[in-house]
View 1: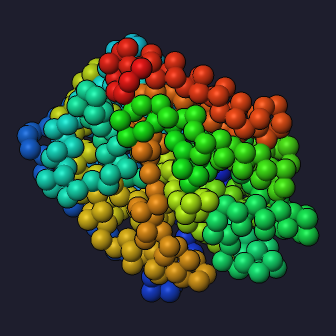
View 2: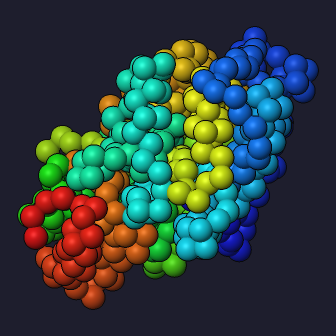
Length: 468
């Protein structure tokens, strides 16, 4: 969900702002008000730069969905700068505004030294520095990077890293336990067939629908991909060849049409990225696909609701596959116009070295790209320092790496995949089938007719592999 999205109720950011700085419990059982808040005593470690630094470092990044993170990040970045002789400034904008702002700076050949994207910025590879050296240095220092993070920044066609991924966010299912208990599934659904059958029963008996969008917004994008993958389909194969029009993809689209008819209403076609969170918290939705951020707010804004919100890993498709995309994935690029690229590189390495603070101050929203930098993570998930009831409610996320992937699955998140993501082709396809405008087969063919030319254009530019 996009922090800038607005709806008739609260946006995600307003949800989260309600609880900024008011974390409920810490590990020892005292309230945040008693202790000042924070998962544990995580101290900063200064990574000495490999060379003397000076000048300004200008950073552009999103306004985090959990405001506590930015309240920590900005003074922390400035303090690092003071210690190494660099004047650091951080500008925050909404997630949805980053691509256009970055494109404008690239076109003008001036602007920030570091820009953070929240989806793979492969299309901007010609305008940014190759960060292969930085990624290699990070692996030397911090161990192997999570594969989905690597596939979100490395272009196997050009052999370049167009970005540096420092973290990622899981995208589980969120459900209202009280509603699913009434139909005999207190732990929520485990398969897409259960979601259809039992979700339909909840709608009939309790008057509460599911919340899986089919509109031009982030969560609809993620849901369409998770369903297609879990049914065995994909946009491309691992060599960047288009394989979209398959029996498995058609089966997934047909499923979505049946799911809509049995469990949802037309409002899902006009949702913005705040809608599913609002509905879950309000009790008008029984199940959604989303991250944990709105739940964090509910813990303070509506504790009774928060205690009724539980999570599932991705649901299994008809052949037992269960996959979900990362929700958002923070990736830094260093533009070719950067005036202080050395400071930008050193800043990134210092951030990774201190990632326990980043994860802590995101209230366990952002996971590390380099697992060993946050050794406390599994312990925090087992005994949530931010007051989950029960305390191990988030323990299932310890396995999130196993069921999470990048938007290019099973291949890299290349420029063609990025364009398809940004133009919501899959969400629109699902909507056309669900509304009965096209059969599942014709909806897939229509989407493929848009997808293939996109791949070909990027191949002609030398940024995407595979065969025409």
